[in-house]
Image 1 (cartoon, rainbow, N blue to C red):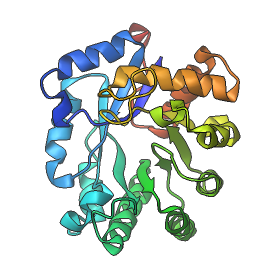
Image 2 (cartoon, one colour):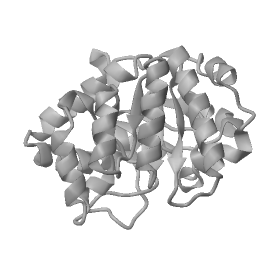
Image 3 (cartoon, rainbow, N blue to C red):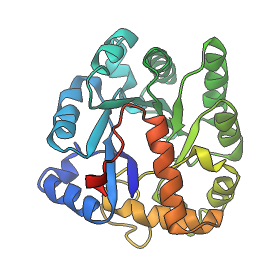
Amino acid sequence: MLVDSHCHLDFPDFAEERQDIVARALAAGVGRMVTISTRVRKFQQVLEIAESFEEVYCSVGTHPHNAAEELDVTAAELVRLAAHPKVVAIGEAGLDYHYDYAPREAQAQGLRTHIAAARETGLPLVIHARSADEDMAAILEEETGKGAFPFILHCFSSGPRLAEVGVALGGHISFSGIITFKNSAELREIAVRVPRERLLVETDAPYLAPVPHRGRRNEPAYVCETAKVLAATIGVSEQEVADITTRNVFRLFSKMPRPTQRDG
């Protein structure tokens, strides 16, 4: 069994065939999916999808692109919404200096609000970090100094120092289809150095489809291809990488029910 720890099933790309998307994932051995919130004000749509499928869970949070729109969202509101049984994570929140769609100060403020909610709930914070390694490392170190909180550096595409800081502070590193790309040798080198108990896999669907699907719309079933490359990269079998990453998911996403014998 594999888990797609990060996808966006609420996005319009999936609207016409969401049932089929989930069915294909289950048929491929993907037993759980976490669909990730990007706007708290649209959280209800994400939650409704999670409630529609036994195998789908969700997060609540504001993507850094949307940070300036939702600066009124408080940690208390995130904590309240996260009480729902289907909510297993906070976020995604973070810093994106590649696009800078929101002012950097707004992104940092939003990130700190989400950190407070993760600290209070004990739910993992899903962190988006792009082209912001130094500032992200500094905020993580500063905030951890105020009190530890669980977190994931999702769709990891940063440099080795941020991976090292993340691991040192107790975080997990999640690899997406990017690790399968030919020009991602440095990323694969980073993956080798991440402790196995901190590894996760994801799709970030509908984005970043792994080889051999690159260039097409991504979907949760394709996490199998990412896991296959991760297994070869760290020198274990595909079964072992499935066992490692799935065990890590259930330890980290502690609200997510573990599979029963019926689930297989």
